[in-house]
Length: 119
Image (cartoon, rainbow, N blue to C red):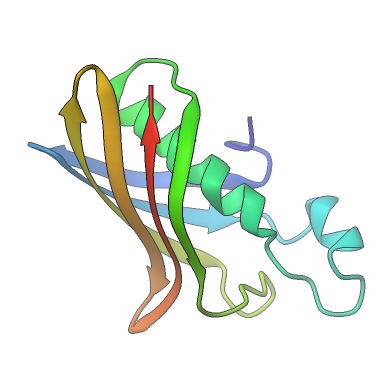
C-alpha cells in the first residue's frame, strides 16, 4: 500500500459513479531515490496502484487490477515540481467487475490516463 507513505489522501468526494481525489506526494520517499536519482519521477506502476487504492477507499472494499486496457503516460511527474495531484475516476459495475476510466492531473496538465477493470 502506497497511501500514507508515497502519498497522502487530502480530499475524496464520491458521487454516483465519479470519484475526485486530491493527493500530496511525499518527495522524500525512497522510490524517488532510484527512479531517477538526479531527476525524481513518479513510476507508472505506482500511478496504477493509486487508482486501485483510491477506488478501494471510496468503495470500502479490497480490489485487484484485472486488466489495464489503455495506459497513457503524458507527462513525467517530478515530486519536487508537482507536489499535489488531482485524480478523476469514473467507473461502472458490470457483472461484479468495475470498469474504470481515470486521469491524474495538476491544474491544466494531465499526466496519466488509464482504462481498466478491477474486481
